[in-house]
Image (cartoon, rainbow, N blue to C red; front, side, top):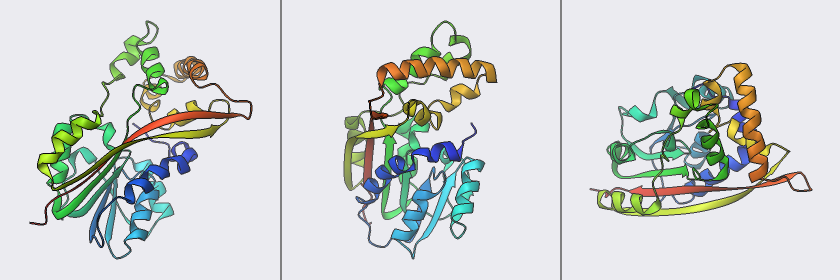
Length: 257
């Protein structure tokens, strides 16, 4: 899938806030090797580098478009194009940080142990994932894709929710680590504009569905989806839309030895 950095960055403030909340809970003083998985345009990678300015920080993403923006905005940092599903660095990390990326991967029962194997003793895995797949923004998209008009082309793109509930991660990860900090937050985001939620999903969840259609089809599908969104998220008199967005946070640390 091709990513659009400009579209993604339309809501950079809202997308950055969970990363800052995740960063504040990382229990490391001076990690030396840091990886940012699914770094996108590199804004969070730059924050990690600023926070630990003596660390070697590498941003990793599969999107050439995103990395081009990252390199342009932050030329002094190290960037690598790679599929994070196959993350296997030559040097293990003190910190593996991933903000809003691992939900694109299935089979978390194998993804998370593999990531833990790439940490040094005492290393930390810090993850934030959207957890709003049953929200109207997503459910309307899936329902429309599976409607008779679109099911042949778009039905196969509807995935089961990739993120498990919080209890699953706690029970699964607790035996594998020394410390675990896990929580969920719903951000009530105030967005501006008539089709604000549509603009948000254009940068993420809607992308693969539009890419599967030709230009005319994509315009029709997007219009139908926009109508459903306006019913679910009505625009207020001040031209704002309240968009609740739930996110799951996981910070785990390995034993020192």
